[in-house]
Length: 374
Image 1 (cartoon, rainbow, N blue to C red):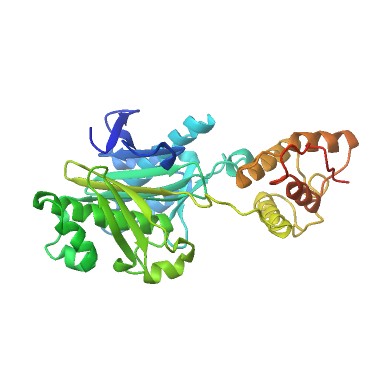
Image 2 (image 1 turned 30 degrees about the vertical axis):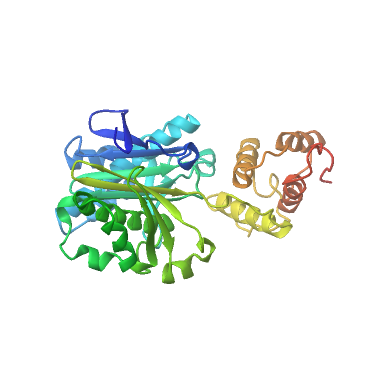
């Protein structure tokens, strides 16, 4: 069995993998998909899977037809990954046209839900992290349920490597890691190391803009297929919180392709946020919620959910769920909502921040009703 355990879930065209031998906690709530060929003519596929905005972009693309096809292949496999991820973890079933993939300012793919499916229950709760790669007619995508995860995937063909590749891509210390490998594995592992750098660059959202040597390979494990990367120089100045930390990338080879993937979940050790940080988060979340609503005034701490912002009971439930998921902490929102319903009163954003501050990381054994919002 190779490093990526293949599981066909849809057809002989689309496949998912799970790296064998990895710690189970390394890839939680994730789906990795591969697509080796168009399942139908490109123009037909575009009509079947693209949102109206994506179809407009597809129709406007000019230049080399190969690039246009790679873009569509990448969108197809990415939508498969996102759809399967949501079906497995949330029982949410969306058509591919409902999933819109747009680039952020640095080119990282972001998952959005296209109209008319952009209900609050979808928009606020499910925004998976995503990475896409394609080469030589094959595309792969890695989707992770955690929206805060740093996700990167890459693939390259062994047939495309240049003769001077190693001297350009690697430092002397990195080349010494290749020197100890059997000669017949050197070419493959050089490409694995390159793909590992690419995957980390994608996970951080900046690519290799900080320079090739800013992503330093410090260890390779031929038995497990893992490669450890540390940030240096420009990359470290962009992400100083990663100083002294190694990023583990999983790699494999299948036929003439080398694949790499990383999921780095931030905040394994979380600090309790301050009252002001909680309020700032809630104001930002409310701004996102109300940007499509008919609410002309700026959202402030004094804004009230029901009488001013126009919340309905389902909106409140969605918001409370999003807060719990953001802080990874269950809170007694059901009691809070029942209480304000019984008292027939409203709730301001500032009062909600006070409630979250009270129950976030509170002492063990504290009753949900020990402190009430007046």
